[in-house]
Length: 342
Image (spheres, rainbow, N blue to C red):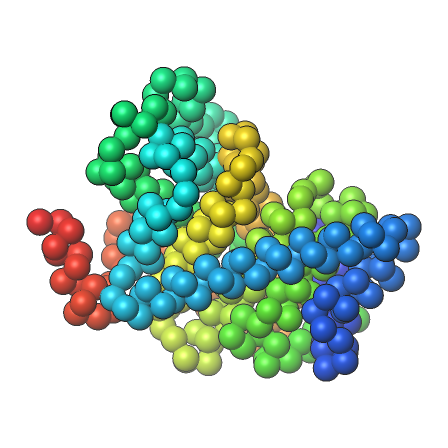
């Protein structure tokens, strides 16, 4: 992957969005920018790219909001995901098989980040294993708990990955015209506008061969997750949140992202689910996240931001190796956890 070319694409798209944010809607800006960058594309093709980006980002924002509301009501992100999927249409056997494919995708991503040649996957080809009579509510719920747990760990694993830190360093050192073009306002709150801009940069990079061929839905999902992490890193620097709270945010963002992917890929064949989840949470997602974070670091903040990201990454490693544990943040959650364990 050409990191310098990728960062330049992000620079162009974010800078262009910043200049036109007050003049154009997300859709108008996306079509205008992508049309200028890909003059060989038809109007219909450019419109289709814009629609896919916006529909994906809308879905991810919806799931983020639903999870936040559930957390405010006392649920953990993991409990919310289980409940969310349990309420989804489809038979128990169908949900269980789909859950297994998501677990396989997460396992594939983990193997990539850990640089393992072999990965053990769940066999989903035996149709008899996924008959409804083998999957009552309790067994399905246990399986979905595993999906929720592994989803959260996949988000932390990406932050802990050496490939992300290297991509951040590459992003910081990439040759661009300036490094102070992104306003804090654009990053604060993980704005949808910044997610659109990053998605556009990825779409252009994919169409021009800078990154491997990838669906627009996957690229927009990676953009959503990437901007969420960039915003929380900024919050740690500004002392708006602690490192532990940043870890919780990153973990929970991964969980809400899995919920969005579940809806988005409801009708896909099994192998497509595995590949999609693997790309979002594997090396490609980590490199993109690192490149964006490196680009967004201002020269005056470079040492602080890099130090914070590395601190969060080390904390994620300790968490993944069970040296530390994430807390529940209110008594309602602690009470519910104790009830579930009894």
